[in-house]
Amino acid sequence: MIKDRVLIIDGLNLFTRHYIAHPGMSENGDQVGGTVGFFNNLTRLIRRCMPEKVYVIWEGGGSRKKRDLYSDYKKGSKPQRMNRYYDDIPDTKKNRNNQLKNLIALLRFVPVIQVYVDDAEADDVIGYLCNYSLKEKNKIIVSSDHDYYQLINEKTIIWSPTLKAFVNDKKVIERYNVHPNNFCLAKCIVGDKSDNIPGIKGVGYKVLTKCLDKFSKSDFYDMESVFLDVLEMKENFSRKFYNDVFESKDLIKRNWKLVLLDSNNLVYKQTKIINESIENYQLTWNNIEAYKFLNKLGIKTVDLLSSSKIFHQLKKG
Image (cartoon, rainbow, N blue to C red; front, side):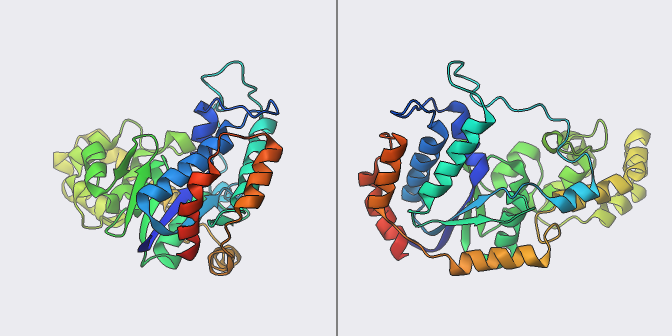
């Protein structure tokens, strides 16, 4: 294992990816693709990244602070069809929730640290870990969520299961022409349809960076500087862009509170739970109990024997 390197997994994000696409069924006749896919993917990631510790962060029912700030936050999205490729596999919340419950139980036999904070989103917890509790560690975030791009720096990169590649500052700039240091602010202006966060109509990343090229630079671009630059260079902008930015000041400021991944959407009690979770978690590797549990579920497609060595090493640190 590599000292000071940690793996931080957005649990629901990775699980959902496997639940959608993995057709695995147990000998009991139950769908188990999400559980099996996540677990096997976990062992591959540990082998590839060789972290000294692994953190799996679960959703805590959504952020009350964000809903209080903007009642339509994450509303209006079409329900995601889970097993989109396999019509003969049940597509029910009960099935999904049972798999999640079984996965969380299975991971208790494995030397990973699971963190759940009530009334908090996984991305806010991960933002807090990256900025505070694990600030000095070399971090690899596992998620396909673009919100985490704002956390990329010399100590933090992302493994994207969708791209099947590591994402660093260069890749973010190539894709959006926005530096990670300024990605949060850019998203506040552009908006985020996946979370039902409206931005300035007609302004995407391409338009934004064409008008304000400072977004592509590594220097932090703060909100007031954006407004000043638009004001000072208004003759270089179309009247529509100029008017839209100033008419959307309150919108951009509100979006900042929604999009920023730091401690802003957590209360003291929640940060205390995060810190206590990672400090007091007892790492275990009980392959016998894991085998019994999988056998009870009728799951024969998890190779615990080949995983044993890597988990023993992870337990030692």
